[in-house]
Image 1 (tube, rainbow, N blue to C red):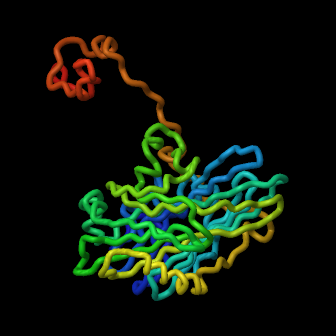
Image 2 (cartoon, rainbow, N blue to C red):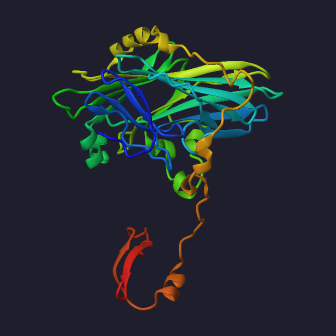
Image 3 (cartoon, helix red, strand yellow):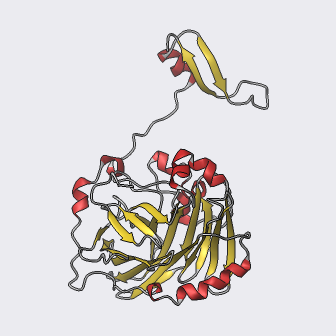
Amino acid sequence: MSSPIPHPILLGRPQGLQAELLTHGALRRLLAPGLMVNLFPGNELEGGPANLWLRRRDAQGRVQLAPLLGPGSPLAPCVGSQDGDSFAMRGRWQDLALTLELRLVPEQTTAFWHLSARNEGGTPCTLNLLLLQDLGLADYGALRLNEYYVSHYLDLQPLTHERHGVLLAVRQNQAQRGRHPWLLAGSLRRCVRWATDAAQVFGHAAHEGLLPAALLEGLPGRRLQHEHAMAALEDQDLVLAAGAQGRTGFVLHLEAHHPQASDATDLERLAALLALPQAVATLAAGPADGTPAPRPARESASLFATAPLLATRELQPDEIEQFLPGPRRHEEREARDGQGQPGRLLSFFHAED
């Protein structure tokens, strides 16, 4: 199927995972034979829900947050970093030199994200990397027809590994061509918090132009089977002294058919995954000459990603009457309160409208 996105970055091979990345690094589609892994395709204007976010906490406890993919990322794709199975972005955020790598395993349905960070400031800082991967695990046509319906059939099971913390196992219970696709997501270090639905991660903050509280303060560590299935993992603290460098990352492993429900025996797969050569980062934090890579995509960053939202408030009853006088039809209200009074007005028809 041809892509309408101009000049997408294409990684992978038909027998394994294939990634379609947009010009700012955001994931458009993550594909396996006969399946799309992500639930919502990304786009050039806004990116998509799949992302890696970096939280930074300084010595005074101040918290900052940045997406590493998409139009809001401080990183830029590295020229010449793509070899068909890997992709890298580099840049600076605050006083950190950062390199982000995506490495796909040839002929296998396994991918690794690697982040290398160097603290170029004069004081220590603490970093947490968060993986947000929305999940469909279904035929592309089924997903585009009704994402919510598909999401209802995904079972997301947290599994606890002695060394690597919580991993999320995700099984598609609605058979796809007679098979039940299955995905395992985990930290290369140790996952300390997690979530299973985008509603837990984003809430209503994005509608108000705010950063999600769960990304600022920590994921809830509870399972929610809602309508926006997501493997959300938060890595343990990475403490960097001034001048120090550290690495962290995540693994995504897909299997075409997992006949049984997920259980603790699925953790046995992790050792073989971490033994793959792609489980090791290949690039250091920041370019060798200390110069950030150019970011041509910044010139076309859209207002959808950069403009603040218009702050609004609800109209009060007397204001509604002032602006829309006269009788109203088909009013909808919240349930009556404890005193039997009508609840808050939600919607209505007025005049000829």
